[in-house]
Length: 369
Image (cartoon, rainbow, N blue to C red; front, side):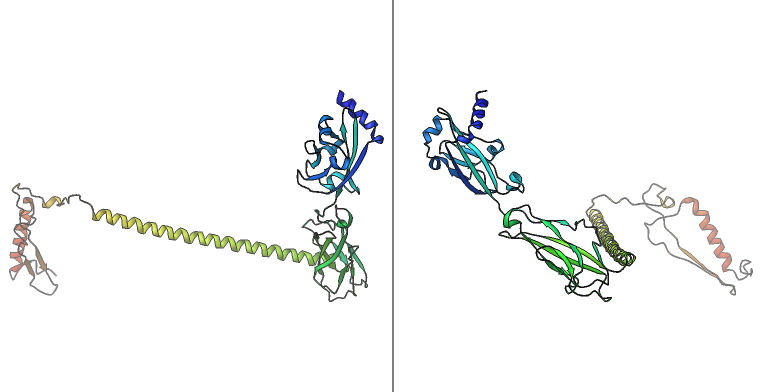
């Protein structure tokens, strides 16, 4: 309550301030930057600041400036953005009071905020949406000085930092259009002819007058045609070609990615198979498992003596026009080879008897044609 009364009395007594002082500082100063020495400038004493419980008062300005009673100086409490504090108001200043108690004293302080060129120009027209193909249309009958459009831009800075200039940076035909350096008006500088391209593109750069200078760029698409259908057909074909090229590029990249993936996959599979076969061969080569012989059932040792019977080979040769045939028996391959089962003895006897019959000159088997 006491503080509110004190502030109320101070506000009523503004017109009778004991002293006042002004300072000028640039915007965007870092926190803790020095503003001014009020002890020296107001003729005060540091002890008086401490005994009088010196403090500052002023609405919102208190959050930007603070008083250091130990040194008797004013410091930047928070970064000051002139565009936020004052907008387009010029000059931009902070007003506050330094208040002392016992006895009551107050001093008026004014701090001027100097503008810095910290903002680039902002283009208001043409609006840069990114999807506009035509901003303005110029008839082919346009004379010299025909007003095509006007680039509108602003700068939130103040003073000379907000002075803007315009110039053409790039153009499809530099001999056809120009832009006013001060007003941003785009006009024709010669007669439009039938040979001029329908699609005209201008890149205009907007610069301020600050140090260092800041700039912004705006693109203006102009159509040189007498009717809107002509413009529409021209720009529709252009859009179609662009979309076709974009799609073709996409599919080419996709096809290349698929082919590369398949190739890499095949290489990996082939290498994996090679490695697998090599590992299997190495495993079989180093195996220490015993080899178990296999004998067909008809050649097993049925006598239990451990000695296999003999194997007999024979060959029969016959012709259609010969009365004689040959039957050859081979010797046993070895004394310890596979033998035939006992049940096959009759078969061997039958074969032997057939051999005797064939050897006879008048064998009935040979008479059969």
